[in-house]
Image 1 (cartoon, helix red, strand yellow):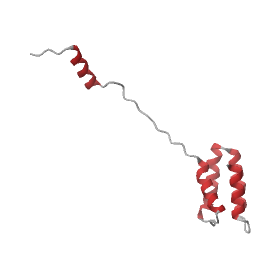
Image 2 (tube, helix red, strand yellow):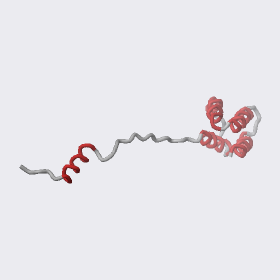
Image 3 (tube, helix red, strand yellow):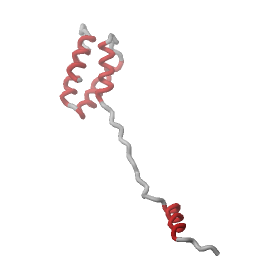
Length: 101
């Protein structure tokens, strides 16, 4: 019968028990709430017309408010002005962008 040396026993023990504790890692992905707003405003600044996304303006403002209340206030006022008839959407979008960047 073969005898196991301490080195072999240590290797077997490490193999079956694992060399370390299992770690649970949580990956957190941070998303800039202003990123989508800036993309949308850049589209308006480049001549894109207002579409159905205007119904989401309050949601955008609420999301930004959690991170930056001052910028949320700028967006809220700007979005209200953009929707007024006769507003130069391109110029207003550029103005809002300059204030939130």
